Length: 146
Image (tube, rainbow, N blue to C red; front, side, top):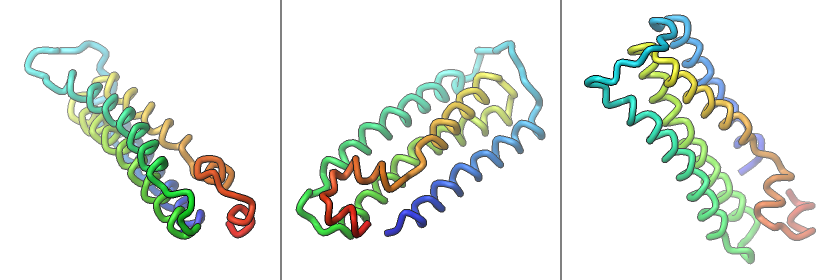
Protein backbone atom coordinates (compact mmCIF):
# COMPACT_ATOMS: atom_id res chain seq x y z
CA UNK A 1 0.00 0.00 0.00
CA UNK A 2 1.23 3.42 -0.80
CA UNK A 3 -0.13 6.76 0.17
CA UNK A 4 -0.30 7.65 -3.49
CA UNK A 5 -2.85 4.87 -4.03
CA UNK A 6 -4.92 5.88 -1.02
CA UNK A 7 -4.76 9.55 -2.06
CA UNK A 8 -5.93 8.65 -5.58
CA UNK A 9 -8.83 6.62 -4.18
CA UNK A 10 -9.82 9.48 -1.88
CA UNK A 11 -9.55 12.08 -4.65
CA UNK A 12 -11.63 10.00 -7.07
CA UNK A 13 -14.33 9.46 -4.46
CA UNK A 14 -14.54 13.17 -3.68
CA UNK A 15 -14.50 14.16 -7.36
CA UNK A 16 -17.18 11.62 -8.29
CA UNK A 17 -19.37 12.90 -5.48
CA UNK A 18 -18.76 16.52 -6.53
CA UNK A 19 -19.59 15.70 -10.15
CA UNK A 20 -22.81 14.00 -9.11
CA UNK A 21 -23.68 16.97 -6.87
CA UNK A 22 -23.14 19.33 -9.80
CA UNK A 23 -25.28 17.11 -12.02
CA UNK A 24 -28.12 17.07 -9.51
CA UNK A 25 -27.83 20.83 -8.96
CA UNK A 26 -28.03 21.72 -12.64
CA UNK A 27 -30.47 19.05 -13.84
CA UNK A 28 -32.73 18.82 -10.80
CA UNK A 29 -35.94 20.71 -10.21
CA UNK A 30 -34.16 23.55 -8.39
CA UNK A 31 -34.27 24.39 -4.72
CA UNK A 32 -37.60 23.80 -2.99
CA UNK A 33 -37.79 25.35 0.46
CA UNK A 34 -41.28 24.27 1.47
CA UNK A 35 -41.50 20.69 2.59
CA UNK A 36 -44.44 18.45 1.95
CA UNK A 37 -44.05 15.91 4.70
CA UNK A 38 -47.07 13.89 3.64
CA UNK A 39 -46.16 10.50 2.18
CA UNK A 40 -42.46 11.34 2.14
CA UNK A 41 -40.52 8.91 4.27
CA UNK A 42 -37.19 10.23 2.99
CA UNK A 43 -37.60 13.42 5.00
CA UNK A 44 -36.69 11.18 7.96
CA UNK A 45 -34.55 8.56 6.22
CA UNK A 46 -31.94 10.88 4.66
CA UNK A 47 -30.95 12.71 7.89
CA UNK A 48 -30.95 9.47 9.89
CA UNK A 49 -28.83 7.63 7.31
CA UNK A 50 -26.46 10.62 7.15
CA UNK A 51 -25.99 10.62 10.92
CA UNK A 52 -25.59 6.85 11.02
CA UNK A 53 -23.00 7.01 8.24
CA UNK A 54 -21.04 9.74 9.99
CA UNK A 55 -21.02 8.12 13.42
CA UNK A 56 -20.50 4.60 12.06
CA UNK A 57 -17.52 5.81 10.02
CA UNK A 58 -15.91 7.33 13.09
CA UNK A 59 -16.67 4.31 15.30
CA UNK A 60 -15.59 1.63 12.82
CA UNK A 61 -12.49 3.58 11.81
CA UNK A 62 -11.40 3.89 15.43
CA UNK A 63 -12.19 0.22 16.04
CA UNK A 64 -10.22 -0.86 12.95
CA UNK A 65 -7.23 1.23 13.98
CA UNK A 66 -7.26 -0.15 17.51
CA UNK A 67 -7.32 -3.70 16.11
CA UNK A 68 -4.01 -3.18 14.32
CA UNK A 69 -1.27 -5.05 16.16
CA UNK A 70 1.58 -2.66 17.06
CA UNK A 71 4.13 -5.46 16.59
CA UNK A 72 2.89 -6.36 13.09
CA UNK A 73 5.09 -5.63 10.08
CA UNK A 74 4.76 -2.20 8.52
CA UNK A 75 3.19 -3.56 5.31
CA UNK A 76 0.46 -5.26 7.32
CA UNK A 77 -0.21 -2.12 9.33
CA UNK A 78 -0.44 -0.02 6.17
CA UNK A 79 -2.76 -2.49 4.45
CA UNK A 80 -5.10 -2.47 7.45
CA UNK A 81 -4.85 1.32 7.59
CA UNK A 82 -5.87 1.56 3.94
CA UNK A 83 -8.78 -0.81 4.52
CA UNK A 84 -9.98 1.26 7.49
CA UNK A 85 -9.81 4.47 5.46
CA UNK A 86 -11.71 3.02 2.52
CA UNK A 87 -14.42 1.80 4.90
CA UNK A 88 -14.63 5.28 6.43
CA UNK A 89 -14.90 6.88 2.99
CA UNK A 90 -17.64 4.48 1.90
CA UNK A 91 -19.72 5.12 5.01
CA UNK A 92 -19.60 8.85 4.34
CA UNK A 93 -20.08 8.71 0.58
CA UNK A 94 -23.09 6.39 0.58
CA UNK A 95 -25.38 8.71 2.57
CA UNK A 96 -24.17 11.69 0.52
CA UNK A 97 -25.18 9.95 -2.71
CA UNK A 98 -28.56 9.11 -1.17
CA UNK A 99 -29.08 12.76 -0.25
CA UNK A 100 -28.19 13.95 -3.75
CA UNK A 101 -30.46 11.35 -5.35
CA UNK A 102 -33.34 12.53 -3.21
CA UNK A 103 -32.54 16.15 -4.06
CA UNK A 104 -32.67 15.19 -7.73
CA UNK A 105 -36.12 13.67 -7.30
CA UNK A 106 -37.85 16.51 -5.45
CA UNK A 107 -35.46 19.45 -4.97
CA UNK A 108 -35.66 19.78 -1.20
CA UNK A 109 -32.86 22.06 -0.03
CA UNK A 110 -32.34 19.92 3.08
CA UNK A 111 -31.15 16.97 0.98
CA UNK A 112 -28.64 19.04 -0.97
CA UNK A 113 -27.34 20.60 2.23
CA UNK A 114 -26.85 17.20 3.86
CA UNK A 115 -25.09 15.84 0.78
CA UNK A 116 -22.84 18.90 0.47
CA UNK A 117 -21.94 18.74 4.16
CA UNK A 118 -20.98 15.09 3.91
CA UNK A 119 -19.01 15.81 0.74
CA UNK A 120 -17.06 18.56 2.52
CA UNK A 121 -16.41 16.27 5.48
CA UNK A 122 -15.19 13.54 3.12
CA UNK A 123 -12.84 15.98 1.40
CA UNK A 124 -11.32 16.89 4.78
CA UNK A 125 -10.47 13.23 5.44
CA UNK A 126 -7.56 13.28 2.98
CA UNK A 127 -4.87 10.77 3.97
CA UNK A 128 -1.35 11.91 4.74
CA UNK A 129 1.85 10.35 6.01
CA UNK A 130 1.82 12.53 9.12
CA UNK A 131 -1.71 11.43 9.93
CA UNK A 132 -0.77 7.76 9.45
CA UNK A 133 2.30 8.09 11.64
CA UNK A 134 0.20 9.59 14.40
CA UNK A 135 -2.74 7.19 14.12
CA UNK A 136 -0.62 4.06 13.79
CA UNK A 137 1.93 5.12 16.46
CA UNK A 138 4.85 4.15 14.27
CA UNK A 139 8.33 3.92 15.75
CA UNK A 140 11.33 5.72 14.25
CA UNK A 141 12.46 2.88 11.96
CA UNK A 142 8.93 2.50 10.58
CA UNK A 143 8.67 6.26 10.09
CA UNK A 144 11.90 6.29 8.14
CA UNK A 145 10.86 3.42 5.89
CA UNK A 146 7.47 5.00 5.27
